[in-house]
Amino acid sequence: GQQLNQSPQSMFIQEGEDVSMNCTSSSIFNTWLWYKQDPGEGPVLLIALYKAGELTSNGRLTAQFGITRKDSFLNISASIPSDVGIYFCAGRERNYGQNFVFGPGTRLSVLP
Amino acid sequence: GAGVSQSPRYKVAKRGQDVALRCDPISGHVSLFWYQQALGQGPEFLTYFQNEAQLDKSGLPSDRFFAERPEGSVSTLKIQRTQQEDSAVYLCASSLLGRVMNTEAFFGQGTRLTVV
Image (tube, rainbow over all chains, first blue to last red; front, side):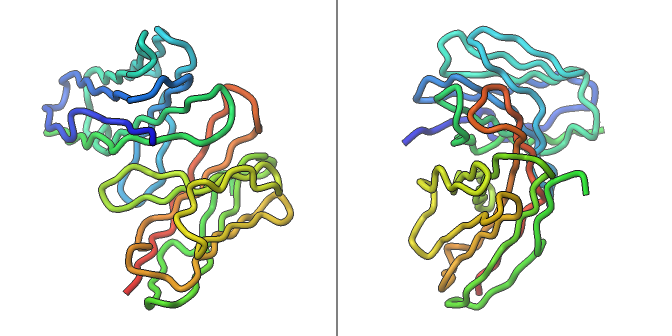
């Protein structure tokens, strides 16, 4: 079946540093989503991408839909302590329907 | 409330017991999804409803898992004869529209099921 890989698996950064993480797929996707999950909470949608090459920002977050449609990238600029959490990418092959496939997540720790 | 509400937040079941997990989606949301999240993993799709119709149940791991949404709002995920491998967080999500692009899914806090 479909599989997503996320890298890095975990990362420790200093407050104020920029962060980059990516997600790759064995399949072509038409939709990419990035979620953040805090302990004991459900995932919260950060950014949604719908077109190959699309670059979308949400505050300090920027995500890109890879041109090959098999990858996506999330960047966080000037990290702050509340950025700590697990970041999941999720992809969907079709333009509709709701069967999203999630990656295993990137665990981000921010050191003061 | 304004968000997706799930109950109970925590459930401990003895192996072999039946459990029922409830999801109250955001009012007016057409689509509802159930996901299973094992410890340290990303959520895995279980099933999808559009209103009361269960359009996709391809992710249900066995016939012990059953989901319903009889009136197109509240949904219940039932697991019969629970096994230890069923231990996970069960997440419910809802979105406003059905088969339309650019819909966002909002997740509840999840129910953490522990089978002992």
